[in-house]
Length: 71
Length: 318
Picture 1 (cartoon, rainbow over the protein chains, first blue to last red):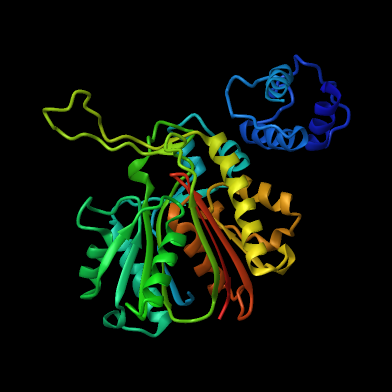
Picture 2 (picture 1 turned 45 degrees about the horizontal axis):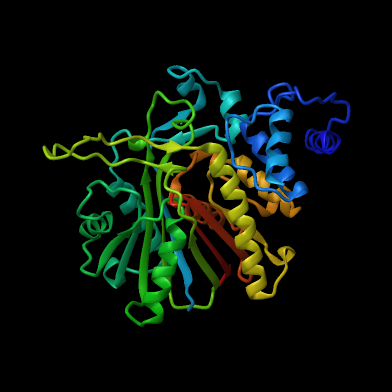
């Protein structure tokens, strides 16, 4: 799942060089709050899940947990 | 069901407030506001009333329609709150214009213009009116906490009007509500009622920005799909997308998803901020003034707002 999310993030940021781990935060990726929403919407489409917006989603690891629980 | 718009007008307060001015008393900056919203300035009422703005917009729309005020037989104002809780803004406007026809307000948040069009369409179809004046007017500055940098930078004050009459321009109109008052609201107070257990003051705009963004992008996309399906046309056949000007990032996100060129998505939010229900008719007014809409053009108008309300319509300009 991390590979797939990495690909989505790389596509969104147009940066193929990002070294993304579960500890990577959206702040590390220089994504503001609206970038984060757009990214989550792309992830919803890709994984066919619905993600409720929450301030608790701060890192890629947080996102993976939410996707896994929604699937 | 159909109508056409025969004249438009605007009423904008004189005082323009730049991002730089806001950064004088808020922890913000021009770069922060522009990068997150696309807004560079907005107009704020310093001495004008909402009735003043509405009357200015209405008179211009009447003039462009070649109609006199006494030829209007229905006035619909869209506003979240006029100069008074009661009487309605439409009644105040009727007083200014000297009309005797029915007049009332609709409140559908930022979607109010599309709701007003639907009401107008119904009155025309029922032959209850021939010339209808729609005025969308909002004074968001009175509903904002001017110490909250996340919301007060977003909105502006202003009014826009149009006169509608029988015609065949309106091809499709759809309204809906996905009820979720918590996402975007402005609380009412309880006054000085001595029997209230938990007194409440009039509140300011509460907005969960990420939720609104997500809702807006999804609502416009869904609304467009439904409209295209109903009319059996393609996205490419839409000449202009007139979206509620809530945030340039919302417009950009929708345009990117639809893979459409930038020139099909006109914006004016950089000069006005979010004018709630007045945003689409003001955009329409400006495009007409600039001769950017011609007869036969297909326009998709889409709005979303507190409720959460949505409204979409398609017009082939006459």
